[in-house]
Image (cartoon, rainbow, N blue to C red):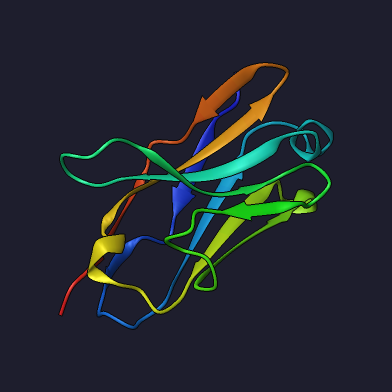
Length: 117
């Protein structure tokens, strides 16, 4: 069982920035094999994938966050990050880190991001 712990959420004004972090409990080798994702879920909406980074560092983004968000990973720290810039009110949601490997998916507990003036 892989445990994922997110941090870095909070309240930010529109146009501001936040950096989310997620650290995994598994070994560095195992972490390096994971595809890692950031999802988000806004009140009353379904959970949606925001960004993905594969084990070989290929990235993909939802259209709504392209050119504003950047996903990255540091295998030596068993961590994945989401740099969020030019935040909008519609980015308000609980953000979840997820790991996928060998047909198994793991989730963190989520971190709240609120964009409001």
